[in-house]
Length: 253
Image (cartoon, rainbow, N blue to C red; front, side):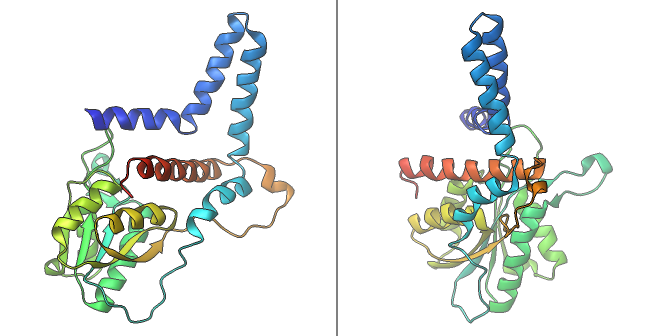
């Protein structure tokens, strides 16, 4: 129950929910004759909603997270396992079909599969379900089914399907991997936090980032048109910066 409450609060403080709450609060205050404060909140909510929906702003938020982690080169490496962290699945029960990894998870998985095959080391798939209400789909199981299709034999895989977030991933994998040197496959924006958490558990972490979000973009008048994709990217970046602060203060990284 505590996990569910934390998740709900998290959704509410992140854009766009927090911005909608800000605008609604402004409308409520206007009706209560606090017009100046109400107008200020509405203006702030709309302005932030617009700014965070611009590509250059989204890149500005995410790039510092991704820049320290360029793609892993193809040189020979020594590691005890490749660890892939789940980032969500798509529940296709409504179509009568099996669940599949979402694009972010699939990008992480493909990177991990390539490395596990190349270095002939175990592929550790870590993540249960981090959604409080959405679905019962399990990321690690979904990734395992996809990894089989990609040519990884079942005996080469270790499936951890209980953890619900990155810190739980790190504790769970620590119990499963005997060695201390791992290749970690996760999204580039998420790598700083994931690497720190796994290092806190005693691992030497070789980053294998994937699913980059930031780009090199030329500014044009069209760049000023807000887009939902850029709002989503800004929200992802903000959530990651807040998570770094939160988990850092809690001593988990």
